[in-house]
Image 1: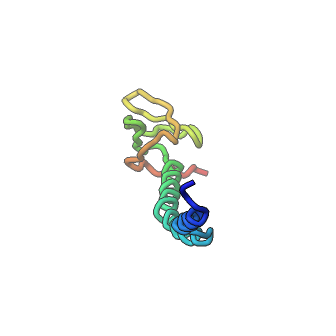
Image 2 (image 1 turned 30 degrees about the horizontal axis):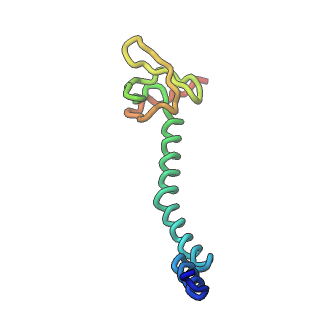
Image 3 (image 1 turned 45 degrees about the vertical axis):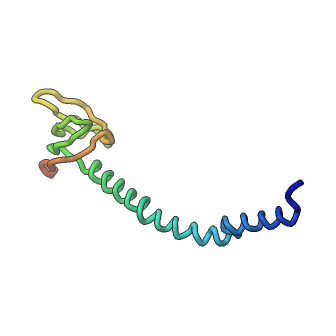
Amino acid sequence: MFITNAYAQSATDSVASAFGGSGFEMIILFVPLMVVWYFLLIRPQRAQAKKRDEILKNIRRGDQIVTSGIVGKVTKVIDDKELEVEIAEGVRIRVVRSAISEVRVKGEPVKADAA
């Protein structure tokens, strides 16, 4: 053998100290990274998703929408998941709300039922 036990032990010690040494030091480095990641990535995505859900939930008759390149006007709200959209005069299709990419123009307000 060309390497003695003393050299092997000192090499192992220097490698352990180069990679942080203790688990506590790794936690001290990891926690601020997670905090930054939360505020820069997770929180804005949640806010954006909440805003999109609110917009999709508030679509009503008369709104102009865009879905996968097709622009149309909402003629009927079928249920919580589907809408009927007129894409040309006399041409109506059913669209799933989750497929809508943009709501361009807000339509007429909901009329109050006569009691």
